[in-house]
Length: 198
Image 1: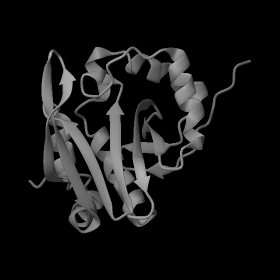
Image 2 (image 1 turned 90 degrees about the vertical axis):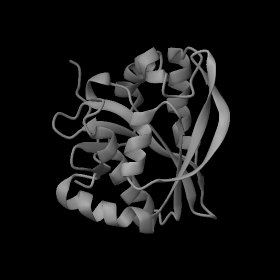
Image 3 (image 1 turned 180 degrees about the vertical axis):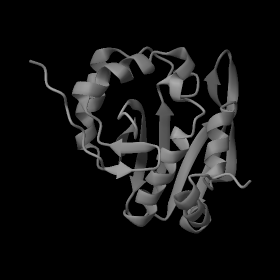
C-alpha cells in the first residue's frame, strides 16, 4: 500500500505555502522543469540536468548553511509548482540574494510567485533580521523584473552582456531591497493581497 506524504507548512501566504523540499515527492517535477526550455530560458541553466544531478542537489541542501531553499505549493490543493530561496546569505552583513522559478507553466502570471516572494521577504526581514535582499534578472525576463519591482526592489545597476542565451549576450539587471522600502508594500499586501497601486 502506498502512503501519502503529508508535507509541513513552514510559511503560509494568501495563495501559496512555502515548505522544505522533499526529494521523494519533488525530485521528478524538478527534473522535468529544469529540462523544459520554456522554464530554463529565464534561468542561467544551459546544460541538461540529469536525474542523478537533481538527486545530488536535494541531498546537498541540508549541508548548505548559506542557503534556505523552499518548495512553493498552492494553498488550495497543495500542488507543488516551484522553488524559491534565499541564497549566498552573508550572516555578518545581513545580506542575501533571492532566486525563484515557477516550474509548472499552468501557474504562470497568476500571482503565485508574487505571493511566495512577499511571504519569503517577511521571513527574511522579520525572522532572520536580514538587512538587504538582492536579486538578478536577465533583461528580457520582464515578468520577473516587474514582479520584483512591484515587491519593492529597486534598480541598482546592470552587468552588460553578462549572460549568453538564445544566440546572443544579454544584460543582467541588479536589484536590491531594504526592509523600509518593502514594509509599506507588505502592509498593503497583508490586507488586500495586492502589490500594485491601482
